[in-house]
Image 1 (cartoon, rainbow, N blue to C red):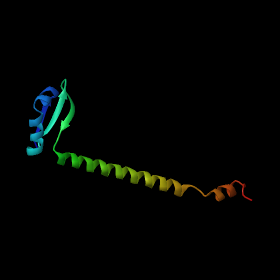
Image 2: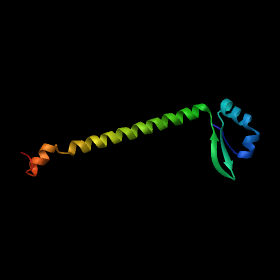
Image 3: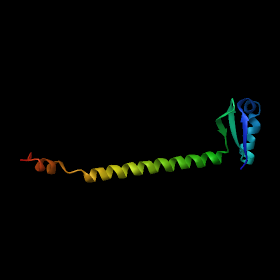
Image 4: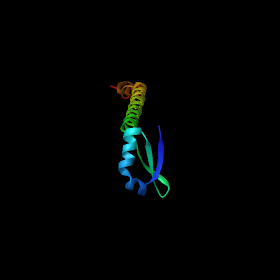
Length: 90
């Protein structure tokens, strides 16, 4: 997949061409401001893949959090047991 780097000024002047290249040829264009990358124009298919990866990462994080909380609850003693242990139960 082709990749181009162009300035923001050039992007403004040639936006239709940049979009056509992304849509037609799959070209990824990195837009720079003062020589630093600030944005990218990419084919929609690339964006969809990125969003799927983000969704999978978010799901994995949620699963890890749930597993951690479940383990923490499993280690916690029931209140009645804690009270009995410290002689506070009736």
